[in-house]
Structure formats: structure tokens, C-alpha cells
Amino acid sequence: MPIGIQRLNAKTSQPNPHIVFIKPLKGRDEKVAQDFLERIAAQCLPVMRKHHIHVMSLEEFPPNREFVGRNFNAGEVIQLVLKSPGSGRWLPFNYVQMVMMHELAHCAQMNHSRAFWAVRNQYAAQMQELWAEGYKGDGLWGRGATLGTGEWEKNSVLADEVLPEHLCGGTYRSRGRKRKANPVLTYQERKEKRILKKFGKNGVALGADEEEKVKLEKGKRVLAKPRVAGSLRGRELRAAAALARFQQNKEDTKKEEEDEDTKNWDVDAAVDVDGSKMVDRHGGDMVKVCEDEDANDADARNELDQLHGLFDRRKIKRDPDGETLNLRSSEKSQQQPEQATSTINLYYYDDANFLKNPFKQHHNRNKIIIVNLLNVLV
Image (cartoon, rainbow, N blue to C red; front, side, top):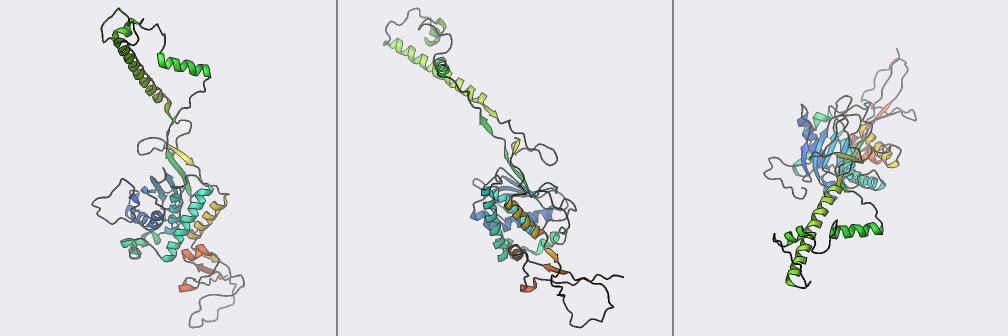
């Protein structure tokens, strides 16, 4: 739980104490989306705990063709897209989890720099280790909590569906306030400003300003001038004058700071995908810190390859040697008439092993399924 926030009298078990709020979109799939986000939060708990990451709100964002996830104010809000923009089907769970790793890395590095990719790859490697261990979450959110996942697994996206153009929609921060730079003054200008600030404008001889004398004498009009500078009356007048100057300087400084403490209007306010202006929880404008990831960057391409591997869990490849690796039945089938055929082998890999070696056949625990498809030409 972030510092300063404590949950009291919680009615349900929280999947991740490092995430305060989980907010799905309102609608008929709200309950399924709530469960989806809670399982995302539960599985990434070890990563967040190890790196001391705290998120105020994990939210679902409507399907769009621009991005899958984005980060606001270094973890104040993380938004994830859970459905395909084309068909409305659910995105694969591990795919969304890797997007979550990307957005968590933005809590440490806001820009898509080399430092960011080092952090992101570290988080992704740790998540792959959790997948290999079969980790789902702590306590009630562990392996026994997988019974309700069928709703999005049976209605998952198809392999030929088009995903959003960019993985990350960028990072955003609240528009800050900056101190306006003071103009550079010459020595003579600084000297005049210092004298003006200390003694004020339109200076007169000491004791010649009758109005100031009345103020310093507490409303009494005294015609005589103090003859001795070290006298009691002279010391009192100097002290009163110094106090008046100090108060005036304090008011001038405060006014100057208020004038210079202006908003940073040199950067345009961020605009959402629907064209509306983005604001924070205080109603202030949001500013985009980093743009979408560079498609030509090697780290970005590597991330996309990993995500495509998660998305295309079923890989179709032709047998290079022409050998038939189909599943044979116990009984030999009857001889079919001669016909043109082609053999296509369908491989299915588990997520963890596929990420490590996408082109290696994994025979453990029947994780490879081979099907022989016949194309009959009439």
C-alpha cells in the first residue's frame, strides 16, 4: 500500500497491496473485466514488491486503434486495454500482462530511453520466471483461483485480428508551474535596483517628509528634529523606519513571486484519443512526456516480437522434410483414392517455453499437437 494510504474494513481480499484502486469500465462485462484486472494485479505482485513500485489506480481503457497501455504521473494511474478494437474479443492474458510490465517500467523511467528498456527487460524476465513457476498470485489469488478465467479465454482474439498500432500510448504528467527567468541586468542596473529597493523612490532629506514623521511618531506632529543621532528618540525613529522598510520589502517580494510563478504554457496540453483535453484529478492540464515507442528501435522490435509470440500462440508451419508427422489412429484407415494432398503441421507451445525458444519443439507433457490437414481437390 502506498505511503499515507491504509485500507480499513476491506470486505474482499485484495490481489495486490501495492495497487490501491482497480477500476473496470461500466457495462455488461464489468465483472469479467474486474476479474481480469485483479488477476493481472495479483500476478505482478512479486515484481512490484521487489522494485518498490506503487500504483494508485489500475484502470481499464476502451478498445482503440492507438495503444494498449499508458502511464500517468509515474504510476498515479495506469490504463490497460483489455479488448480488441475490431471484434471486441478479450486480449490474451499474458499479452496484457507484458503490457503491464511496460507501463510499470515507466514508473522508474518515463521516456523510452536505453535506461527504460533495461528496466522493462528486467521486469519482463522476472514475469517469465513467474510464468515458468506457475505463479498466479498470493493466498486466495494463487493457482486455485483459475476457475473463473474461462469467460475471456473462450472469447479470446483470433490470430488474424489487427492489434492497435502502438503498444504504449505514451506517458503523461500534470502541467507543472515554473519560475520565470529573470532578465540579466548590468552592474549599474543592479546597483540602482538595490538602492531603490532599500530606500524607495523620490528620496528626500532625513526628517523632511512630514507625512512619514507623523506615521513614525504614532500620529503626533512634532516640529523639532532629533538633534543627536544617538538619542533615544533618534534610535526609535531609525528602528521604526527599518521595520517599515522590511515590511514593504516583504510585500514586494511576495508580489514579485506571484507574478513570476506562472504556468508553463509553452507545451500544448495533451489530447485524448477522442479529441478531448486530458486533465488530472485536480482539473489541471496533462502534458505528454514521451511519445510512442520507435518501431525502428531494436529493443522495441524485440518487445513486439515477444508480444506477437504471446498473441499468436498457435503457429502453423510446413514440414521442411516433407515427412508426415500426423497423429496415427490405432486402426489403419482404408485406402483413399489418389488425390492431391498437402501436409501442414500445427504446433502449440506453452507461453514460457515459447518465449525462450519460439522455434524449438517442446515434447514435454504433450505440449506439441500435430495435425495432418488434407486438401481434397474434386
